[in-house]
Length: 369
Ligand SMILES: *Cc1c(COP(=O)(O)O)cnc(C)c1O
Image (cartoon, rainbow, N blue to C red; front, top):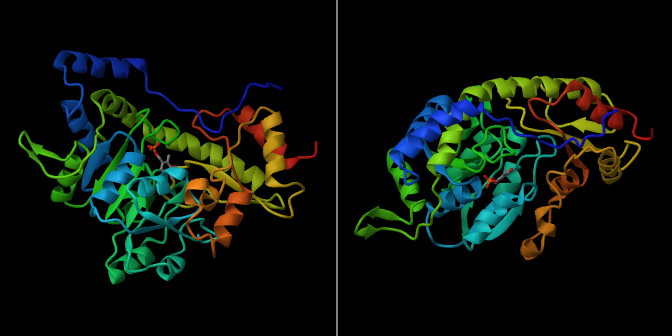
């Protein structure tokens, strides 16, 4: 049996030739950044591909979340967000000086529980920042209704969501704003990168200005912007990658179906993302290791590690346990805490070989071997 390390994810890349043509364009034009011609083409292609009104490309999704939240206003307050997420979600809001109010998740979907969000709204709430975790849709209708009733904007951290949809289109069309990541570990990558999705041209232009120091023109600077722009090289990587993303998602689906067939009936294991729901991008394959599995999640994690399999506890530790969030309330977050204690994401990428996948499956089926 091969003992080559198996990583939790491994990026696919477009053929080098596809990139070379675009690089030649950059060298010829000498536009390296500042909304160059390749970036503008990439934005237009993404608007078409995702069928969303407006795309603002950014250097990464963390800056995207910061710019999106900042565009709602500069006064500080509270941001309600799930305790079960990647650190970047809460960090983006905290970096702007907001207080973080963690809300619990629905134990079934692992997404923000709207009724718990509503309980935590105060006069200082500035925004709701939900995450479509593993690209499974949040209860978008309930969150939109709460946002409208309390006049609080909803900004989605849709970092995982490229290519994911519900019955009416891309998940990224929900909320006042949505942010998606193009990091190397996501379904679609520009190595580093991301985008903010907005619904009218004035908002898009305001977001673009915030990403460029707040500059309106040579003599007018309207806001305390920062530099969150995407470069021409990153946009070229995206343009070259876009024709392959649908194929990548199909290949991910095959891997996910194989995991589901072998693992979904194992006592004590719950597979969070059944492959039969329409519109998935198969970003991740999280399992929850329950009390009636023969060993704890952490012991299984170590066994996989010893077999050269790099599963990942996304997301652990719970954000309230991190030093910078110790002042946030950790009450009533039982479902988030259980998910953080049980979750394990298995290796998943488009060209994961079946024999390598079988090494992962064998470890989980027969953990005491
Ligand atoms: C990856 C990720 C981010 C950050 O994206 P970057 O583009 O790397 O900044 C934010 N939120 C979640 C939930 C993520 O998984």
